[in-house]
Length: 363
Figure: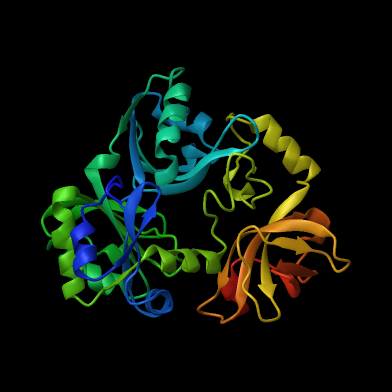
């Protein structure tokens, strides 16, 4: 693991006995106390994740908004200072370069947060597109450490670390951010996260990382690994790049039509508009397993006659629901809610049914 990148929290993870694994070129904690315990802690209380592997690009210049309008699928003109937008970058061939967050700092300055495994190709792609715009791009990925503080009690744990006189992070609306001081360090605090449990993502300079982590530990926040982050996002039906979306999937079939706005010009607009008009040939759906079994990526989905109609892209045993759940692309004709299907799990065909996201609505 000597060739893996370590985050500023690496020794904090080791001190706490984390199980470390390779992930997107980084050495990252997959678990501490155990996946199920960490998952339930975030759902019911508060936990924190090291997500410093994410990439951050700063975009500035007189045509910053015009550039992002063309680069991304969502409507950047709808943003205001302090507002965040979930979006994706179409690849010019109907697929997705990456999904990302767009932060508006001002009319001419934006902050992009991209996936770790895609950072290098995203940087090349964004710079290629930027050649036609009066805009400057800076890769700040190595300058930031990032904690995802997630769960219903996140505000209570973060508030003591915010400098006196600063605004209460609990006043932040979902998908907005503020620049504030945390333990005296200049940070960005955003009301975002990929767990569906509420909370914040805290961007901090690397030199502040260990002290902020330790302060949260002292306040009783449980450290959590990427294993629990994955089961938490799956229960919400949130896409993971490389599993549920990639260069071969389009945002319409992935259920991301809501971040694909056709009131502007952008890469792949005509292609995606045609797919939306005609309807995609397949759709990303949720599957609830009705028998004993856990769906995994790559497992085939069958109709009641035993014909292959799709494939699992993400799957797990839901710690909250206590049942197997999966995300799968299946032929459109079978994508209606409550449609009975089967999942091929080893040598058995296990009964399942199509459900809508999020899975937690089943509770």
